[in-house]
Image (cartoon, rainbow, N blue to C red; front, top):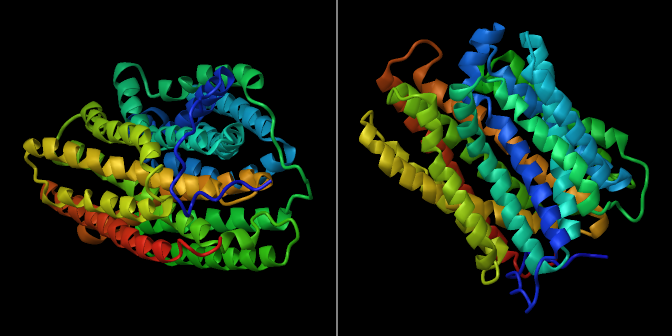
Length: 479
């Protein structure tokens, strides 16, 4: 069975009476809650990093590994787990990932050393790599009617995109009111609830035709992404030194070999014919900029509020509410827009506008009165970020066979995770190029923030316009 290709036409208006059943609503709640929690996990410790460092003895230079270890595992293993779910059962992989999340969150919450915390973050990254594509594949197979699927994917995009910003807010609140350890403990009851409820409301799904798992492809893509993300992270911290260069070259070689192997492998982890589809290829490229740019904006907004304006981590978290609200509204409005506008057209336009509404931050000063226009422009930025994410997800999951949903959702989720993982280091490289790596004044830091946000915004604007031109021309070509 092949799903309808909605990437070339506007999503059809829902037929009369197209409503979710009670069981579908219950499944939607469980799966969306898991997606939100996984997205929030990435950033929940960001504003608490200084306190974690003091508590567990992290040096200032090593604090970034709390985030990097999570990102490496989440981005590096997502595609593999997505494909494994096709074979072994997506609900089974989802449940196993939730069990791992509960265990790793307990380990992180009681950690008494830096090594123990990093082990917990590694396991949390693996749990995210298992749960996120499985939940998305279960969502797409549970909602086969196009309008209901688009509505479900719209809500899913809200959870995935807003989870990162809300995670930063939640981390600030939990740290200020309780302790950074509650950033871990809060996951446990949600994970247990999902483990208990999901067998009753979500049907198992797997590929109708099963073949051997492509182990060479899995190894090559995982190692390629690991080394690539490490290299990019190293560039953001230390500049393009020998270690970073070697990692990036190794990643390029591994990913090139992966492409060659997949071209000749029956039952490939990612069939090259899928990657050659314009909608799939360009959609996943767009995801790198959508999620990478948004996470970089959130990161540098935190620096601006705390280091330039001198406000607290809690206030920095609350400033991000504008992003969260914009994403939620877009998640509600977006599916309605897609009934009238092609996702292909809307993808490029939304990405371009996401970048355009990042650029007003270039005029921000050290005057706290700039907070109001910053919140307003970030609200609009977040709205278009969400519509772009929704278009990308509709395109990514509507152009493949039902048997390949785990692969498609794994690829889509991996693009999101890679974008999140490399967005901050890449934009940070522009920041450090301007301000250096030593102690800087407030004025110098503000200049660096202007440059970093400018690079991110202009990149999104340019790529969005390019995608609009390319996908519009290809809208009538076969997939």
